[in-house]
Image (cartoon, rainbow, N blue to C red):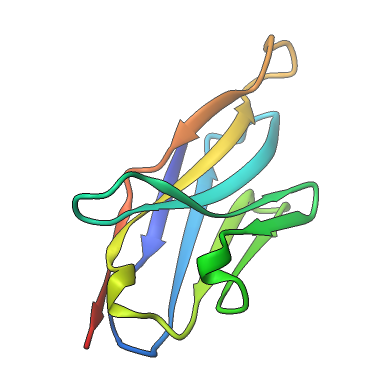
Length: 120
């Protein structure tokens, strides 16, 4: 089981991007899914999460970014709008996964990251 991200790339300041993250391997259960980002020289920070339909957002992105999830596909999306140059970062997908029904607990997985560049 692994997380495979797509999307990202370059966008103009004020523009939009859409990121996708697929959970491969057909796990038994996927609980929380989230997006984090890490800007150059900064720590990784939580951008948005979705758990059982409940979404949370970092204050900096509220009203501009939207996280959504397709449970039938085990895919999570992040729609980024009104991007700012300071939001240049590697965006990482994160998920809590139970691989098998008999698995003891959920494990946390990370995607490889996808770079979002904002051109001013």
